[in-house]
Every structure is written in structure tokens, then in C-alpha cells.
Image 1: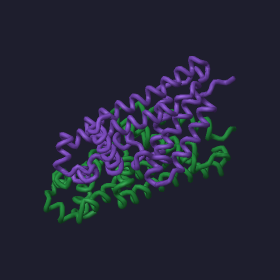
Image 2: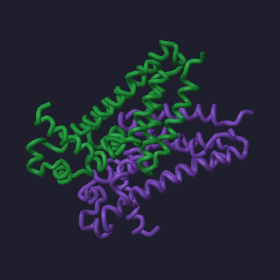
Image 3: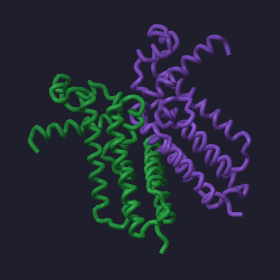
Image 4: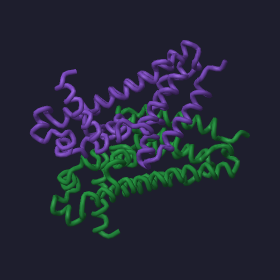
Length: 199
Length: 199
């Protein structure tokens, strides 16, 4: 990575933190200029617009989570273990957050759905990828006899992601990890009891 | 209701629609002045600040949902039926929305958690009330022998609300009701199978 690329990465990371706390609309250009250390004129030397840095900050955040997912799944081959490892990646968005604002997909989904088509497209893409990952794990688990064959992987992907994201919203609202912990405990039990193939 | 109160209610309702689509930060004072039909100077004759109208718009939205909940529960005495009726109130936030932007508690929670202490307090209060309602239904159901006695009502309230709110987020992101429908189907099955007392 060149010096210029490193500088840009630090800038994008700071912007990601700011957007994470304040949202797209809540983070003003002055905030961005100050938080990135660029100043207003410097900001426009690096980025065409707020849209451009917001898109890059979102992509940066997603790349970070994708890496955490890859690390969590690395040594797991069994579908049940892989799903449980995935719950812990979401739990870490509250318990060991790399972004103060919780989950970037949740935040950007809620803010962009009616108002920001470009960010909404990036968020749909990230959500598509999460659903596809859960579905692949479930379908492979069924094929390998680890998961009960009647499980519908698309249905389960919605429930899995909804429960985790809804509880992240609650934990962030109260500043209390109890809600994500309850969601992970619930899903762990549900996966072990209702998804896991009977031996 | 006096003429003045009626006018104010119409204004607050229009502001609630605007905040619902664009969020607190996304709705500018110009947007508010235009959407409410007040113009900028008229706006400040009615409201001290954006904070004031945002709080009133949020309260208006919550009052509306509370009325829908009261209506849905009116003729239901059994705890299982009451929980199922409650899932349909959340489903209607997507399928028969009174606000274009989906669920005001979800939207305001995500936007306010790190950035807007006053709105965050109102949102916590609304979420407290929802959790307390679910807990009361479950605890009364246990007392009446309708719900299995080992169910933890606080745990269940988190899972119930998280799954519904997370799936509202997904349905809004894609403009597709499939996710809230999956969540309601899942909870209906879970409540009937895992909560309902065995006869």
C-alpha cells in the first residue's frame, strides 16, 4: 500500500466512525472535514462529494465485518458450528465494536431505505451477501446430513439476521448488551434444537 | 378539539410523515416548512425548534401505534391470541402502513442512539412500554395456565420485538413484505409450539 493509499484509508476509517455515530445526514461536511483532519478544501481535493466518502466508508465497514466473518468461519466445517460462529460476529458488533455506532448495515438500511438510493443499493448488496452466506451454510448442512432436510434456508436467513439486527438495535438504544446476548442465546438454542439433524 | 388544535394535529401528522421517510437529520427546516405548509416564519410561530416538532411527531406516531395495539387486543383474552394479534400490528407497519417510513421506533432508535439524547429518551420510553406489554401478556398467560411456566418473559420480549423489528428493517430495505411475513410465520409457529401450555 502506497503512502497515499494509507492516508486515504485512515481518512475513510475516520469517516466510517463518524457516519456510524451520526448517520449520513447527521454527519455534516464540517464534521467530516474536521474528523478526517482534511479541512474543507482538503476534503474536496480527496473526494468529489459526501456521497463518495459515504459509499467508501460503508464499503470499508463491510470489508471489516466480512473479514471478521471469514476469520470466525476459518476453522469450522460443520454447518451448526458455522452458524453459531456467525452469531458471535454479530454479538461482537456490540460487545467488541470496531465501530461505535453498532452495525453499519442496520444503520444504513434504516437511513437509506426511503431517502438515499445509492447507499440503499450498497446496503442491499451487503444484505444479499449475508442472506446468501446463511443459505449456503444451511443448504450445505442439509446435504451433509448436519441440518434437518425440511429447513427452508431463505426463511431461516431472514429469521437469523432479523433477530440479531433487531437485538443490536435494542442493545444500542439502551446501551445494554443484554438484548444481543438474549438473541444469541435464543438462536443457539433454536439452531441446536430445531435445525440440527437428529442423530 | 378546537380549530387551532386540529390545525396543529394536521401539521404534526405531516411532520411525522416527513421524519418517517427522511429521518430527523434528513428532514431540513425548509422541508418541514414546506411539508407542513407553514413556511419558515409560520413554522417558528408554532414550534420553538426542530427538536420540539420532532418530539411531537414521534409522540403522534407512537399514539397511533398504541391505538392499533389496543384495537387488536380488545376482544382477545387468551395470552396466545394476544401475542399473535400483536404480531399483526407490526406486520401492518409494512403491509398497511400509516407511515411511509415503516416503524418509527426502529427509525428513531437507530438515528438517536448515539446522537440525539432527547429523542433517544422518548424512544426508550416507547420500547420500555412494548417490552412491558409483552411481559405482562406472557406473565398473565403463565398464571392462567395458557403459557408454559418456564418461559422467561423478559427474554421472550427481546426475541419477539427483535425479530419483528429486524424483519421490518429488511422489508423496508428491499421494498418487499416477504421478510415481515416470514418473521410473523416464524413467531406464530414458535408461540404455538414452544410457548403454548401443553394440554
